[in-house]
Image (tube, rainbow, N blue to C red; front, side):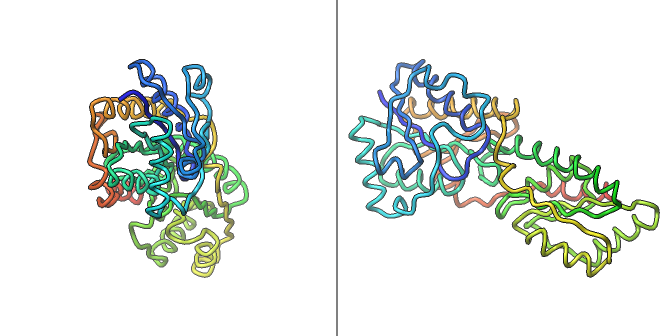
Length: 319
């Protein structure tokens, strides 16, 4: 193998640039030519491909987002679109591809693998919902962004003796809500992986109010319901003064944390090693701080697991 490509797809995540940097420099270190595919699978189909040098990825490790940009691409879900992408890579002499992204990006890598093209998936999403890894690139930065917001919102919640509902991202996974909520001492955390009991929540908040706790923070994962919907339910159940803060896309941005930069560097470098070893059709990850890789055709059928021990702990500590 002499030439490899790298693309980012789907929602951006802090640390993607660190992964790109590692892939480019690891590849060049081993004598490979590395090509960047711009605008995800859309750019792959349209041939938006450029050779990257060591200097191309200088001064990006600290930047959020992705220098290769990202885009959704419905055409790549078709056989014709996938074939166009493969033909473009052949035109540039690219023999292997590293795909950085979430579930949709992995589906694209899976499709290329089924066409016989060597691909390696690198988990890059703030949602932390990719199987085969304890953590995804961007998750640590996102939960620290949310934690900062929780701390600041708690100040105003306390000052005005209000209950604040903080809606966070995560799609169908509750990891962002769980980790940030536990770290921020939230009185209640709602995740899609478990049903909530409004009567139980209301009773717990009333007990806190009776003993002098006049403010509360409730973190709601977007996969449960919107913060505004939940706030309406809560006000009807408690008659407490309630406000909603939807954090939105701020969770995707910002300079990646040290943990995300290191994780991205390790996963990106390992992806290149797998291609050099002739092992396409793999997905890299980290488990118990050890690098792992799995068959990408199999890993996508594995459900994401939430840390229910942490979820139980959050309830025990919010009495």
